[in-house]
Amino acid sequence: TARPRRPAPPRAISPTMRRLLENMRPYPAYVVGRTNDMLAANPSGLYLMPGMAEWPEKQRNTIRYTFLHPQAPSLWPDWEAKARTCVAHLRAVAGRDPDDPELAALVGELAVKSPEFSRMWERYDVRRVGNGQKTFRHPAVGTMTLSHEVLEINGTDGARVTVYSAEPGSPDHDAVVLLDLQGADELDRASRQGARKAAETGS
Image (cartoon, rainbow, N blue to C red):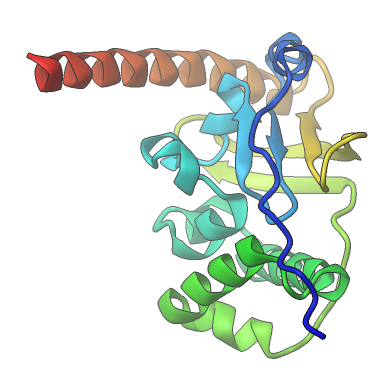
């Protein structure tokens, strides 16, 4: 007998978690679901991936960004390794729940739109997301190498919070502070534009 289709997990993030993300500033922090939909982020967490904020909220996904956003290949000096890690994570999700509808939709989209994803998907690598360091060549703040921690959130269906950090007083930390300031400005600008568009539509 066929297994029942698993319902999509709720996208709501608790007020406590949102406060936690805000309190982590200036360090970039965000919450993703089991297939890496971005469910919440502080300003530097969202701005860490330039152009992500321009996507509609339901489209924001760190793996989709890695393969489909034009700025992604230049953001990570080791883009190939970053991309392979993304695919291996999706393979791990598929191993736990091959009937996941969110997974099927994301894999189908990426297979159609990204030849690189299709090539990597056929490798059948499986890997869990871990901690470590990542280097970013950010167009607004320059090159920075950040440590990151990934923590699973209890009581959720695979949601995780990722936090990046740098040694206080280091050039990397200075870049993070600037990233946070610019990210807040970008979010404020996007909010004003959204309100203006809503007002124009309603008038």
